[in-house]
Image (cartoon, rainbow, N blue to C red):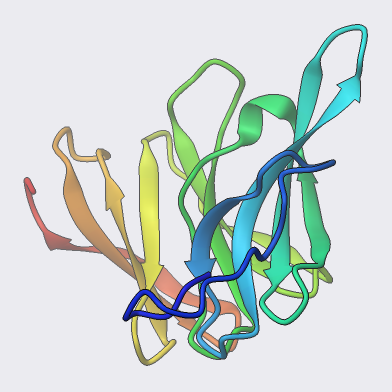
Length: 166
């Protein structure tokens, strides 16, 4: 990490064990970085298991939040403004580019499928007030912007379209 003026750079985490964690989002409270990491399952097959993890900004320690299937890794997601929830897409099945959206407690204690549709739903981000999300979906045949209300980790209502044909 480095200060915005380019000073004070320091190595947060070397790419060992989990290889190099791929940063996705900085927690709003500044305590951790949400990342994806991979670790080989079996040296004979070189297959890797994906992990949703956090990297401590203080000491670079890694905490695995969730293990994923090797084909489930995505490179986007977001952390709620209160740093309690992790929002991310996962493919519905291997080899298909069709995602659903999940909400995972930042401590790993619970996970919920929040957008389940036979479309490609991706690029989820939290609203600044933490009361919902916006995401991109092709469910209408074009790339559109959708919204979903969420209160304290609970979905309220159904997704609604905000902007057609981005």
